[in-house]
Length: 177
Length: 299
Image (cartoon, each protein chain N blue to C red):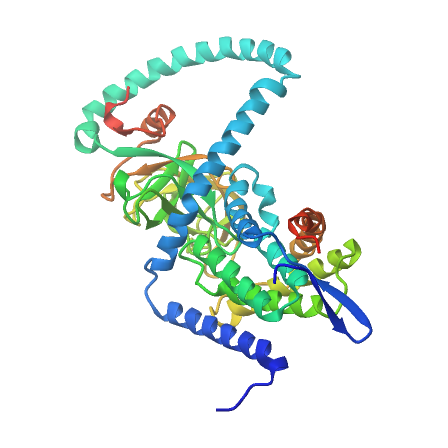
């Protein structure tokens, strides 16, 4: 279970990556703590959604929809809990569950190791994540929220850029086959 | 029992997990917004890391600023010497005025009536872990006497109120949060109206009639009517006024730098008190983050 193996999808062979013990837990906790701590000193870095980037990365790498969605759910619920009592539990949880599921489903069908593919996927997942959050706000919480603004487009680009670099760093946590 | 095809298992799991979380959300919306155990656990588990992170960043920042970023220090020193001389002159003038103000305050029996306003310095150790809310977490909690709904300020002005208290930490809802706000009034006309957040850095003052004369640049202070903030604490400055029907649309720039908070002051009293600016400035400037001191005891 600790070794890498390959998924055979038609004619394509896609490697499923395994990580050092505790690597996923470490990366998740670090992302949540940094997300809450760094903006105290550098408020502009609030634009970066580290928990989402970690969800996308492990979803794309592990390529198992069940573990992808469960990891997304856990990260999202932890983020909800750390966002203060005004954010209901499940707000980020639902959005990251969906992203985790889709990331691992896409990862099982496509080779997502190229930086360009990672950039495009992260951009798309960020927009999807925000769309789900807006949907929850409008339908479940009955709060007005804009669907799109320039800030979202800039944030998606910044997160895609940071995500591409972060994914290369996280690749070092992989076990070699 | 109906067997689920293996290729649909993850899809079924996704549906189940999403349904459970939607139900969880629905339950919360119907309930009162008291803190729940999962929040207590999550905050308790994360706060040591956040404290360590805050300590580490503080150290790194200190080393950088004190040992490396010194390129313009000489020029700045010269400018500061000149500024210092001018400030000394200003201070002596202000001391004279402050002494006069103290005498007047004593005449009004103000200090005898409201002297013991206990203040508690606190350090910001984290902010909201997402953009959905505008909250901060401070390193003071139940053990320091903090309770829910206490007012939080800085020397610049009002910050927000305590919304959740844990053993060693508390969460503060900023005025700029969608659910944040304070009872306020315009300094010139003394017209009252609540100032509330919108989720953006700019706040809005509500329910000011169109007939009222409000100018851009006018200061807004707390009215004390919300039973949380004492009167006359700066809230912000009017940056835009538009006529509406029947109320004006007034946009307000917060007085406190809410996006760059590192230390704050918690008012350890929920009794409405008079709290003149001059006294707050003097007290807050000398307040350390590790001491609880009544305002009246400060020089």
